[in-house]
Length: 270
Image (tube, rainbow, N blue to C red; front, side, top):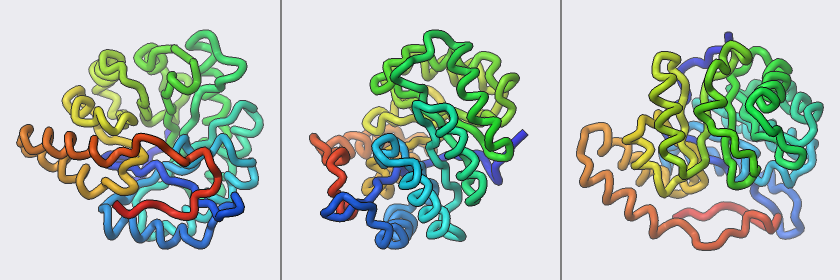
């Protein structure tokens, strides 16, 4: 069974893929990006090529090069680098998983296929199992985001018996507002020591109450320091301060996004 150096927990920045004004990937700033996350935001775990990183809008070769650059630049600076390798094609997803293992990533994550959708738990688990098997030494995470995939299989149902099918399964990136489903995931799997990573940034405090062990999100690129303060306040049971930090984060979340423009030149230092 795959086992990371330590359980993935705390904040995980869902990284932006920086672009030039011509829509090409701006690899030259990723080294600075790593330093900014670590030194300015106190965030040492990242989630690459996910929704924020526009992974599904990139070519396979672009996704591989982006992953390589993050692993290279993050070596000895970041704690864990998880690469999202989900794709509509099983073979492409397996290829990306194999590549992530080859370059030394710390884990892989997979979104549900969203065009020809799996219509029940068994079909989805079989897809995930085939991808995980392509990188048997890497911890495997399921990326649950039904609002974008349209796959409405409850995460709690999916987790039931999943480690018997996927021995490398280590946890869940839960990007949904159904806190009942999330809470049931936690309650029914406490003994398994899964990573329960919440993915709706503006509801993180509620998820912590439900038992979240960490969070993956876009705002941790620029609100990592403030969110870490919220985590610290929650840990010492200073719930009033934790709530104030959560409320302040609402004011910093952009009301519109340019992440689908492919013309991003860097990242905002808020």
